[in-house]
Amino acid sequence: MRVKGGTTQTRRRNKVIRAARGYWGAKSKQFRAAKQQVMKSGMYAYRDRRQRRRDMRRLWIIRVNAAVRLLDLSYSQFIHGLKLAEIEIDRKMLSELAIHDPEAFAAVVDRAKAALAG
Image (tube, rainbow, N blue to C red; front, side, top):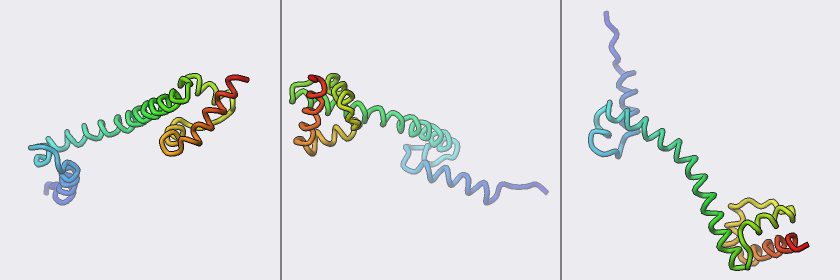
């Protein structure tokens, strides 16, 4: 007697089809096309999770640079001043400070300027 896939195979296929819901055309209906697209989508998702971290860091740097230049300092000098002043605030928090609490950000910039001067 031969063994048929039965419920196990149906469940496996349905899992792939469910993951492909919303894809265009055959990619959401046919198992083979859906399986290929789900695999490719997983690869894109993995890659882009890492890409998003790089993009966010670039955005934070751009924001901090813009805020620091309003206070007559360049980004590189500011970061160097932070290192000299032994202030360990990451770029994400610096960006948030610059947007939501400009007074506190100005105080941090003043500390960095003081460290650069003396």
